[in-house]
Image (tube, rainbow, N blue to C red; front, side, top):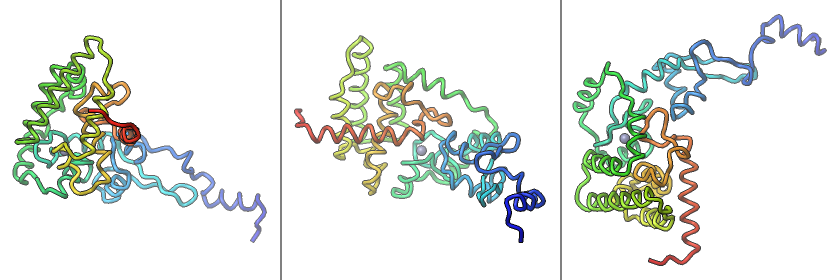
Length: 283
Ligand SMILES: [Zn+2]
């Protein structure tokens, strides 16, 4: 066989391989986005998304590109519709939508369902999703952003959240105390007071030390999730300490942190906790 560069090029041209795009030059077909881009935009697990495409659960394709690589693409409009029509998260009291190929909104709730088994009965889930089908999604993102910006409104939202999660007993007492402290703090800041880092770090430390009942329920028996879940929960509870310009909400779920920022949020909490351990802590 003639192995000279020109002969190889000619053979490639004849076999059609010369025109095949590579990973860098590949362009998704019209209306499609690559699964990788979609996973980032919507905060989805990439391998799950590819599996759903391969299984035909979502309109998409698997393309072969040069170098024996494969690129998955998905019809973006169909993916957005699919995600918007997912039933409510099966974790009791959670108002968010279940994510791709899961009956939970993701992260801590999927895990909490595994460990706790506090699932809505299937019948309730079906009723909720039937009631929501075909209705336009309200612009929750805007509403929630406004709510987070106003301390009193946020306080009331926090109480409703507790009610929705059916928090009772010690957990409820804690939640009420927390909401009260957060409101006082936020009002002080609105009057121009400096944010209190000490208070913030003391709060994370108490969560780290297992003094937060709701957190403990979410973590279950997996200590590796602790710091990440502290960040996740604290972002929800304390927008004043997680300014939304710097720590925006997920594009898909305005009541959840942007998934790509979760590692950085975890890092922020971890660093603060590490610093606290180096310093003596005064009550
Ligand atoms: Zn949930």
